[in-house]
Image (cartoon, rainbow, N blue to C red; front, side, top):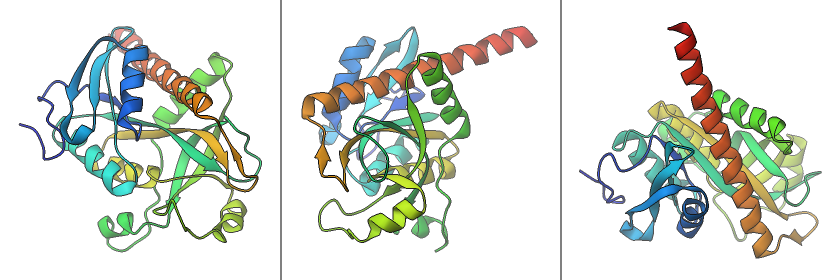
Length: 247
């Protein structure tokens, strides 16, 4: 069985998925970090690769751009492929005192999209990251002397010609990152009872007209991917050790 959007065989996608928007970034993550890597999906060119990282099975897959595309893949991964954890590895624009290259650990995601209201009876959903995953990434960052910032982000439907007057409003509410997927991903995760997290590299400062060169973007994404992989591996190892201790 597969889906209209994913042709991977059941069992070929790991319970933990790294989900960049760009499928070529999924390929880059897989080839750089995975052992025994195989391509498991090419349908709609939304590439997916499964391998192991330090012996643990993991998949990297593209999600496309925007909440609707990301939500389709997240929903099908959860419902059909029994995925339990999704970590979005992506980029964001920044406002306020964030600096180029900062890693933002998206604690919550507000949005101008109507997507979550459509699934939540017309009400406002508090779209939040999974607390356990967020703590695992933050703890791993501290152990490895990497700087991450727990932050509020804003997921917009508009890449071009959006509401530029909204920037002061976002800053007033301590939102420092703008991207296009996390609010939808978090809502799907809450609805489907899985864990989700977004770790975002700040690549464009929207108030200072600063932009990160392409090669630095890729290095930033690789660092984020490695941090998430090390974090999830540490969380799995701790859980296994705790189970053995109790036994």
